[in-house]
Length: 305
Image (tube, rainbow, N blue to C red; front, side, top):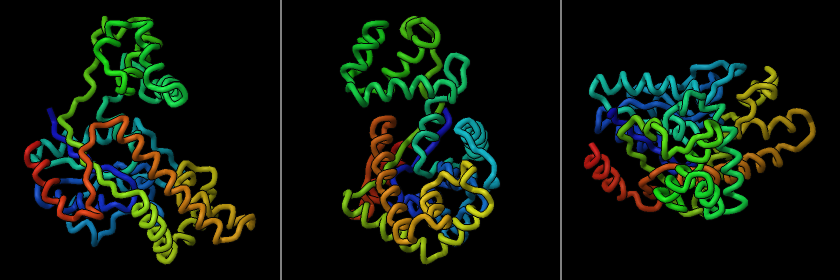
């Protein structure tokens, strides 16, 4: 199986610096897993890696779309699969870095299931995710036990992802997953490293990062997007941009817009962490408060390799 290293976590926890250090040590090439960094011209608000920060390390899936173009999970998966194969053939290590857990989940779990596209299946998945959020994992597991007790017996009540996958197969095909030949969950030998820190520390770092972005010119970057009709584009839905649009329209003061960016960024970080904990097998580290853990990370990667 092809090797893939992924570095995940909320914003402002050191993913970029870690990815560069590991890429230098293990002949790595970096694939951005951020859904907004694909857009040209959106540099500050997406915390896009700078030429200086890259330190000569090759990066992919950055600046590959104009702001009026769409970029789907299917696009990310197909492009990443091609890159991962090419990088492995060079005997280098593909390193996916970014906070869009949905994208990484789609890549590591496989794009298709039963011949349907990932985007089509996502409607069914979201229905069961909402059911689990409202009713709990036990109720979700009971739904599977009712239609496919053989599969339910092999899946822990806490494993929401596998339960939903089995329910999805039954709902789409009318057949039990326990009686089908299903594509394996993953085509890759993947190691996922997660960075996080204490919530209060994280939120303070997020607030500080937004202030730095404003000083670096985020307002002008967002205004350019706005004047080009960005409120109608997928790119205009990104945190750090959409919150400034009411200010440009004269409907809100700048201070309120900046506070909304901070609030939305904190909420997104919380959702990211929930996603990673529920959907992926992550090895967690706290480099913000414990910089010495870099050695543990390197040992973990070395053991995996």
